[in-house]
Amino acid sequence: MTLKYSLIALAPLALALAGPAAATGKMTCKVAASDVKPQAELVTALTKQGWTVTKAKPDGGCYEVYGTTPEGDRVEAYFDPVTFEKLYVSQRGKVLFQKQ
Amino acid sequence: MPSHQTRSPDARWLLWLALAVPSLWLLWRAGQPDADPDALANLSGQVAGVLLVAAIGLTGVARVHPALARLVRVRRAFGLAAFGTSAVHLLLYLRAMGALKPVLAELDAPGIWTGWAALLLLVPLALTSTDAAMRRLGRGWKRLQRLAWPAVGLALAHTYIVHDGQTLAMAMAAVLLLLQITRFNRGRTMT
Image (cartoon, rainbow over all chains, first blue to last red; front, side, top):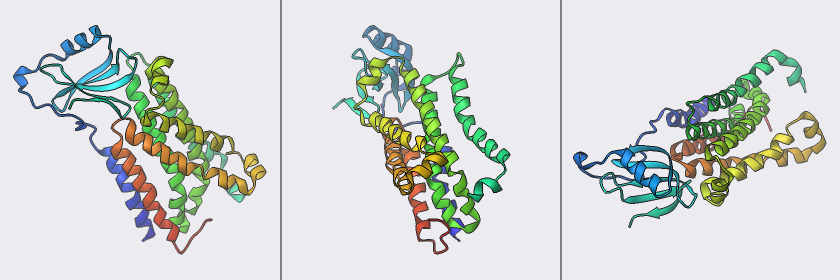
């Protein structure tokens, strides 16, 4: 019976490891797919502003960008895929910017 | 310590080797031209976290049933593997950052200092993991090794905050909490 406890104990870990790592739900953008501008355009615009982009991908309908800001902070940032407006910037879980 | 005599040296080496495999693989993978440094830094942290929880959780698992009591003997191997993998995690993190400036810039972020603090707490534990240190420190050894608890607390906070690690952190916390039930096991087999 006590063996059962240890199996129960290990179940959540197994679930977490098996679980999907998809949409994080940090930000969602509700826009028409036809209005969405290419991701490469956003990366180009950010690079021009002094960002170093290491990775970009769609997430929750927005564009999610990993990289270094012009200020030298390593961040994860969300942008509107139509207007490229900055929505959310987080440095290792510390929210540096959030659109009101 | 009869445990060391009854256990064949081959089996022990095999265990140490098996526990070193994730770290060796991560280091090898990081050297490949198509490596994703961020993803590898993330993954190494997750592996280190699981090993740390395993090392600490083993005490509880061993309390579950006398047949499992022998598992305490592999606790040191898991603890050192957790420390080694954490060191690899730090290395891969620094590599993903690429420069010292952004590393220093985020030192005060809660998702980051918790990780540094957890690793620093593991250093004295790893250094005193030898039989000789255990003898020398006597009763103090156990007190010192209890630092594993604040270390795992910080590591879980780090996992939770730093980047999309909520599920894993909660799962690991749940495992440790549930294993605390075994403290009330009447057929206690270890101290």
